[in-house]
Length: 107
Length: 119
Image (cartoon, rainbow over all chains, first blue to last red; front, side, top):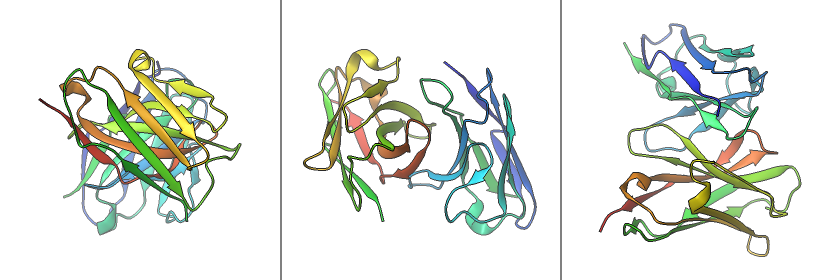
């Protein structure tokens, strides 16, 4: 099983600032990585797939990068609606696995 | 707009079987391009993939749960289902159904349903 590790577990950021979230895979997943946003009481929402492609309707302030074992989700200028928990997920190998999440909170 | 909706009991007794359905509307479950999956999230914790199914019946299961799960599909009702046997308190979670593009990532999700295992 590929273990996905996200860091930090909590990120405190002021509105308008840049947020950088990391996701590391225990072995290479090529570019088979997705990012999701989850707000309290809601289902996750797909943000990024194939490591860097924004899903339909996702604002340009969200960007993904990386390949192999190291990935980054960047939110260029945090808006109030962006404070949430973010998960990465690999789909290079079964079983599909998620990272433990990064909570982005208001500083 | 594709929508998914989970349904089933919110309370299950220990050692019994958890059964959930997911109804797909706004699109057909019988498409070659998609799998349909179950994911769960214990209260306050992260996401765990349970299993996925294609309309043809092809399935993939999480090895950690494989001995206890059955995922099935009914194209006539546009539904797919999850059965999890011999449940314990550790199976208490919000259960989500979702669509996967092929076998990859989840692009549409249901709202989730909380299932509590308790006597």
